[in-house]
Length: 226
Image (cartoon, rainbow, N blue to C red):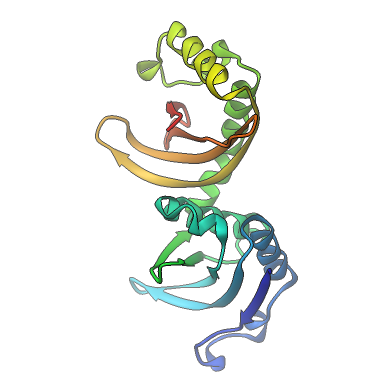
């Protein structure tokens, strides 16, 4: 059963304006979209935090009893990122400086992650490239896939064709791809990158897809089917 609870804030009311404390229609819409994606039970908090001498507004989402999250403990980082991104997508620009996610897992463990407005905007700016590679994968356009690679990391065309053919033969063709979060990583071989976590729909199975993009050039660095 989906449920939601809003906790306006834990800090002194005198520190904030009434407008900042009130739950907005965008807050409610954000949480509705999180529940639609993950199910479970959600609580929220909002307020102001100070970090390195700078104050900023934050919005926090706590979620528990989500089957999807509990079944993917290895994807805690990307699920937390996805929840923050869902909130960001459903808010007016600049509504919050930081969006926090807290996952309460079935084994009693918890995972908390914060994302700045700048980081979430960076992922939003990358979204056209994410949609593009997804379309190319669904349509088996190996030439288009190759064109998206950073030149020095571009694989041979034969490898791309063989991989697509083998995956389709084993699991069936891709009919849909769903974005499921991201991670910012500094890889010794690929450099600073955004790793996009997705899940594909193939016949009756739903295998993962990971796509790495260069944070500066937005070119694709790697794609894997773990």
